[in-house]
Amino acid sequence: MLLKMQRMNILLEKIEKFKNLVMNLGLPVEDIVLFGVLCPYCGKNDRIRPLEQPGNLKGELEEVELTDYQELWIELLNSEVENNGLAVCKFCQNVTFINSDLSAVKPLY
Ligand SMILES: [Zn+2]
Image (cartoon, rainbow, N blue to C red; front, side):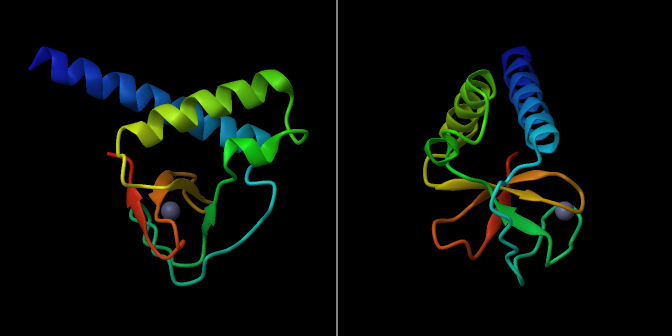
């Protein structure tokens, strides 16, 4: 029970860190709006934007920022193997999983 709570807290911490990084760096660099994809947190259907794979941000971010982004990206995606990417809602700033054809998102926890 305690272990489960600790794991949850660690995950929440990582999500918070990633959210702040995305906000502070103004990511994604390429602003693609996915119309019709519903945000599971705020219910808006025109604010979800897919985030770049870390490898596509080389040269766009400082080395140290890219390292943080990449580490968190891998850790967050590892918690749900079948998901292929991450997205952010530019209305409520929450980060979600996004499927490979960019048609649907899921909350991170
Ligand atoms: Zn939202």
